[in-house]
Length: 422
Figure (tube, rainbow, N blue to C red):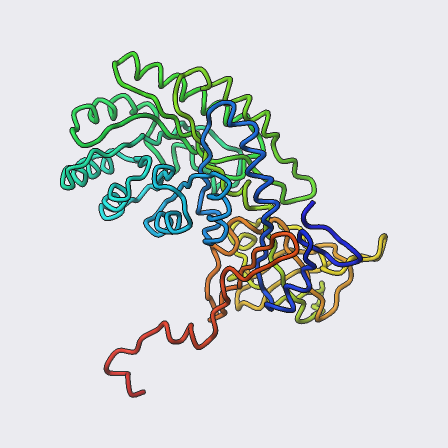
């Protein structure tokens, strides 16, 4: 365990988190290199024998130090915007290991991807396929692509992160795949090589993967029977992680078994795009107690971190375990708190009636499993600076994204000429 109490202090690897909070201030995100490496190697151990490539999904956390860490381990990158592609390239991900996904790629993004020489574009609509043909023709290039299909499989996860149902905006109805391939076959500047699927995030139950991959295998047979070349399969995101003490993260060997059973014998190049399961448990958000406030029916624990720093609880009603940085006494009394932030929104609530060790102003706490969809979704709402980010390796730590100053935030705005003298 890279996050553990040692001599009464919660540590990440060999660094007490209180030391980071003292040096950098709170709120601050802290990431463990050891956890990132362990999670990547765990995927690699079970998937490399099957020939499955691993592309880190930048949408989970696009800090340059995080991307560079995974690139150094051998990961490719799954990107969904021009900005993410530029970040991946800048962090050292080879272009031939970059996959460009996303439902709304612009022509400018397509052109940039082709110019960079990335591995493939995952096309999500017939309109996008036709646009790609036009862009590639204008550049006198041949674009390598796969079609992202929507298999209408329920991932049994939160509605806002489910992506594989018919009512979701992602992908093309899987039954339309043959007609898409038939049209692409007449395109001189698109080389359509395979199929992609992504059914959702935070999957704890592996059964939906089995169902989706079985549909992929059946469609590969159909397409090949029609004379189309299908030699690439993009299997989408990875497995879920533990947020709540009652959560049981899926076994990666069981997941690999499903891959082998359903698509392993199709003679296709395979890839998977985990994000949350690589970085989620590698990160924590540190915050400090500002006030204890007793309401008419409950106690509020007011932190200096708000929904602008960690949006998931407000957006998804997501659970994050919350622990003090100083180890509480074993068997000590617990107090039920509503854990809230300073944002002027009732939704700025992290937990309701959460039993926690008794805390006081000045005490510091850590939100666990906050490495994914934490800092990357942070904002400056209420003109609050976004949190700093820190990377730890062994006994060393470094700031990998500064907290902007208030003056820097103000200077990012511009007054029009008629207000310049105000």
